[in-house]
Length: 417
Image 1 (tube, rainbow, N blue to C red):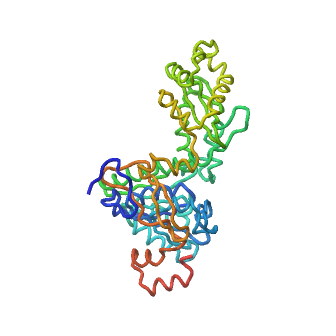
Image 2: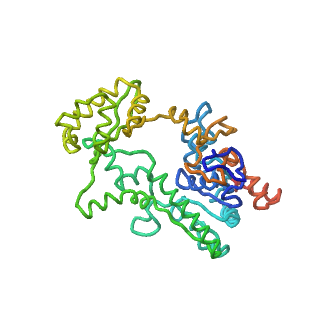
Image 3: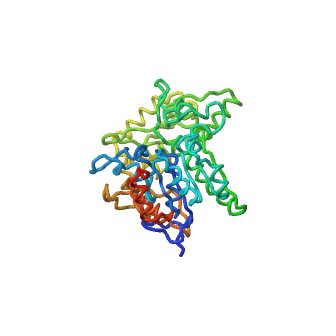
């Protein structure tokens, strides 16, 4: 079965899924591990997420909770990041826990984890031991700063990684303290590198029969996006600083208030042609004769005045009107969208970006699909995110072959906690 390249994703098992048959165990917490597992699950892999009632994935307690009462099964962040996975609870501190974890890991083709630098090794579940029993196994480990070096053992959270890699120094107004721009770089960029690495390791295994251990560093993933600024310092001695919404190669360049409560539009003029088009669309042809705005160089020198004039014009119009008028004139401009705008966006709807699922604790809800489409393998959500320990019996009996009495004995002993 094939589909058109731009066909929307599916809710339910995808026909001829790209990763159909791939078995994955995910010891993932928060974002890095779970996002890697999510990409694999959406493309057909069977992903088993391992948690413990003693040590929840912290995103289970993150909102929004909608109309549901806050609890480990109603966190909206967790429900979005873990759709399509099976979920089990396993107490790795129980004497039998590592034994069952090893069985599960050896069942899998890929193990994804971001528990900490040495957590699995200390439990006897490290890659080398697994590879000795199953040479083709692949493990992807998310770390804060890599597995070697003087700071390898430092724990890492997004707020620290932002500061460490230089993103905070560049975020905010020049006369204000550095800012924390949420979790984009350290939490969501590394799992994209990690997923690509997993796919490369699968290709390597197909050709050689051998697996790989991938170590994905949050610090290095963030430093990657800073490469042009590091080069500017190394070659030109320029240290980049906070500049708010302004750019050294564009003017005007910023976000401007529009009609309505907290409504804004982004405008970016990078050429003289765009500048002339902006003045024409605004019916401000006299600005073309104003010596203060004659070239980019002088516009930068008079940017405060220019921004104020532009804000006076946008402030009397809706952001959608400003965007339409300027885009029609060939000027880069875009509405600053909020959650409602994205939920109602016709382009995202046409692309099937939001997939509706029925979550047993939350009710009907939307989860995100990937931003790419495969021409013959539509992505799909086979099931909503798992409730805590929801699939214990199915996974350990059906996937691993435990008998009913064996499972009951382990359950009574507190292994599945």
